[in-house]
Image 1 (cartoon, rainbow, N blue to C red):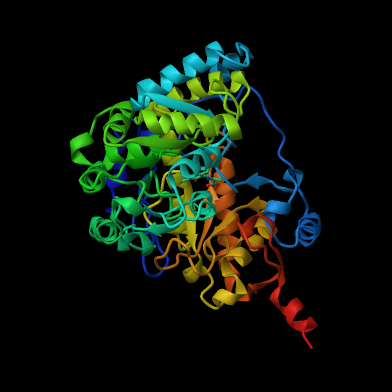
Image 2: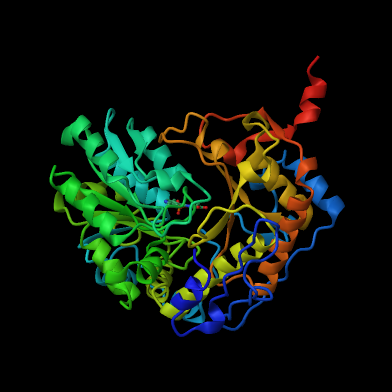
Length: 496
Ligand code: F0G
């Protein structure tokens, strides 16, 4: 990204957008800015939660007990938790107030009516079915539309999306552009679909085999990178020409819209809601985890324009989630979701959100830490191959790095690579080995983020001494949640 570009894009919120602070070949900053200024938080604190502060010895004991899998840690063993931005958001005072007007009727709750009208207004989709979270929406959609032998294209499947396609006998195929697989390439829309690859796949498989095309905005698996409106328009054209419906995985749609506003001239200056609507108008439906851009701790939905599909989704919803007007949630959750979905479109909130993620990325870059560029919407991703080039893939370098960052600063992160997706890479395509530092929304301060950057910088400084890990237990499905590991020397020592 050219120096100064971020500043220019800031548009009226100078404190929220850090100056660009890039590092030259000798490790010195190429910009003369004396440090990246922290972004200004457009909120103040009303309730506080004490942060745990485990000692080095406690962290070491926790790692052993958890078999070096950070999903197995207890939250009181963690100082800063960047495992995920999902369901970890801080709700606003308006959302907490909304919880108090919960109408816990089994059927016909007024909270459902409110929720439905907000989602209809934002998306234009007529049929909306609440679910308890995103993968439940995926369960309803894929159990309804995906059959054994189906082929599901997606720019890049998230792990749960891939798992639901496979669970229903389908074959997930990733069709992101080559740019998505080059962590060092700075391009504005690395989430885009490769239209040529999609066209060839649809021509090869035909509409009988492809029940839907999915596009994930932003592309979480590929670094939280946005999809352009122009690209999505092409996807919609190619699929609709073959009578194939297009569904959005819209978990982070507001963050995607922010990047579109910033980077795509035709949408410059438009509101987030308008940009979102431009995407939704091209789609036939969507799955949503409101635990992301719905600013809640639990909730989601699946939506469609197709009345026949809607009837089947409704049946599946009642079977798996609950009645139409609550779908696996307390009704008060629907009210909080209605407020959160609208708050997530507020420009000042999003400016800070994106600036905060960039702040972390720029602090890390200033320390020479290799990150996936450009910085995405919800997380900074470390480029594992460049961070730990001395470790082979068998030594699970991503997981080894996750362990070291916890050991150093009590910071929990997550591997997004061959451990999460499997070596075969069911969705296909070359492999990316990343460690994700996901920022929960409205949760951590700039000082806490600076602490994270410093800790990761210290790990980077001692990277040559970092050793790999080996599996001691490897489950068949979604292995990253429950796999067990041991330092590779230890396992080697036990082998006669
Ligand atoms: N789609 C995408 C792109 C996601 O990032 C997620 C969840 C889901 C679907 C499933 O939603 O968790 O509500 O069931 N991502 C979380 C993460 C777990 O950490 O990235 P869910």
